[in-house]
Image (cartoon, rainbow, N blue to C red):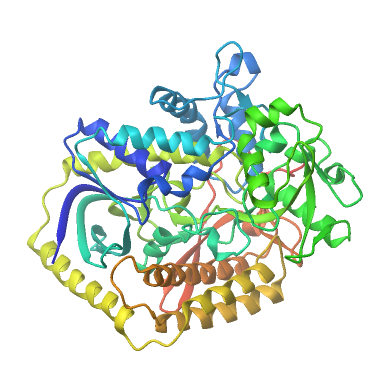
Length: 582
């Protein structure tokens, strides 16, 4: 048995995971052994794809802005499902994180006076989104990775896939990881563990997310019997490029882009007159689909997708070239459209998952309705803290990753410094766990399964696109749940045709597809349970928000092959629910 012992294990290498590693190292003055595990090369985490920016009140007195205004925008944008104590932590600490990234080398776009530039974003009353052109996530990741390489106490395991973890007697013990280079398995034991593996957007086919966004950490928690929260809330970004699904950043509308229908109308005036194209994403996405359903969309003949147009032609060419260079690069490379001269075909695509692992405001993972798991945290998109509620405002995600990366890294370090050594009982549990997991992996590769994983994935995508898209119907969700339950059962008999051990992508894909099907099943089960429309969850038969019955979080837990459900209260500190009008 190959066993690696460390003080802190971090699963996931995006902004949240790398931030956690850095702040844990800072607190311990480099004395703690930190192991960062990524199924990719660490710099290929989906965080590099974040384009638009990171929110925070930097110049409140100059802009008539304040943390309370940022919090109110966030709470209103969440359709009042966000936990307000968590939101207050976010807005208080976000400016400090922007400054931290400035200190480690992020080249923020700046004003003529040298201040960090901030652009408008959907649902924000004040321009408070700091940015580095439209490649913000990449520059933040590069700065974090360069910083981490200088730490002698941090080991990075690239291309290692964590398939399971051991939680026993209410305590995190260890995780099992497969080295994708040669299929060898190892146990990673630690005093503290942080899950920061991102979201599960790939349960949809038309999505802005990377192929790696398969919700591995969320499925890891679910399969360990830990609760998931608000899984029904999946954000559809209004402007995914047709036909590829590549993200066209909200910054394009923040810099003044228009949305046009087939008649050339700026149709957002019908739906959010005060905010127009900069209404929150759930509202803009529903508006686009409403236009398409009313016959005012444009058909892309090759893909069969109907869409609207994002028009940047009226912008100063320098705005596109200096502030939106990635948009131009993407449209030119993918569809040979120059945004200086032609409008961009777009429609809503799955983008962000508000739901995730059920955690408290410190990022501690819940064990049940009252207790948390000793030594286990989650941060970033894999966690549901919940600062986004039913709908995330653009640019709050990078703030969340940075803020809770610091919080969980600091908490995990304190726990590791005070925790004792593993007991003899833990050592026996680890040995048994390794044997069981090694056997499971062997069986997956060499067993008698006959189910093609790619056919399961394609069927799942079809179900989700039809029944769990921008508008949902009760009958459709019932059908989806029934069919996904069958796929979930079939996923236990997956066949891997490629039996090789060296960089076996068939093996990796099978692991990811098993996670995706489980999470699609959970998300659909939760969506069917919530009988209202709130934020990104729009149900045709229950078209209104129902605060009396549904101002609460859905909590899903694994009950054999079924999804168990209970609820938790929304934390309300200052802002009572009100009608959400823009």
